[in-house]
Image 1 (cartoon, rainbow, N blue to C red):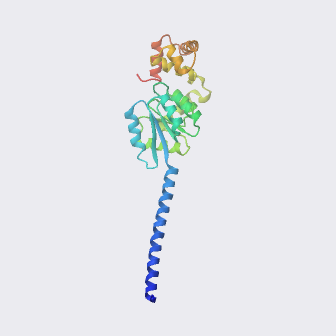
Image 2: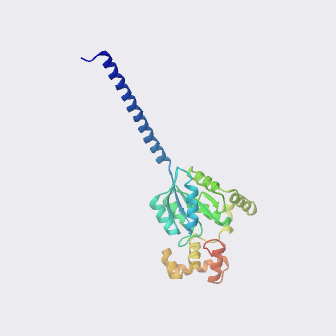
Image 3: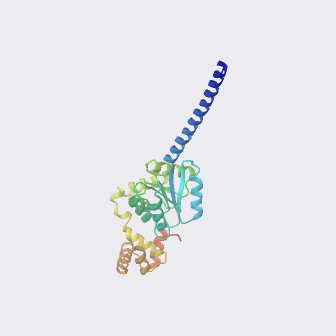
Length: 255
């Protein structure tokens, strides 16, 4: 026979065990919920820049945020497009001057394939023409490479929240151009070249011949010649050296 005190002792022990189980259950539930929250709110960012040291610097700055991760890196435009389509990042940080395919065309292709991926241009170029073309390509942010780390974080945060972002210097450049030349979207003089012509200029400036340009762009040798003629006529260029100088001046290639 078990005494009344024994029943009381057993009951107290059972309550204590139940309390422990309940606390552990609550803790496990909290951890699971927190994991779900962290995964759900993790922002995936991809970097595209020619220079590894630039990508390393960006990685160090952006990974200071615990809810952000760098999901991939690319060192040229074609690789950036292929990797972005594979990884589907939330935000793409893109340089303009890259080998194989410039950042404008890479941005255009990525945005066409992945409309939910936001594109942030990260460049040293303040050219209003390039800013306008970046916007036309689908970029919703534009930041200069000499900006501070906190500003880069602000830019990515804005795009991750589906908001556009332009640094004060870029905004001022756009405003000055608007005031000087009228409504920017109506100013055909901003960019006399087509997308294809810009791609041809970049490849020619990289030292590729007509055959290599045709192969890279999937067009005929005759079409390349037509583009070269149009480029020379529109820009009043007379030689391949003039084309190279134009490409360097407009940041289509690095000197």
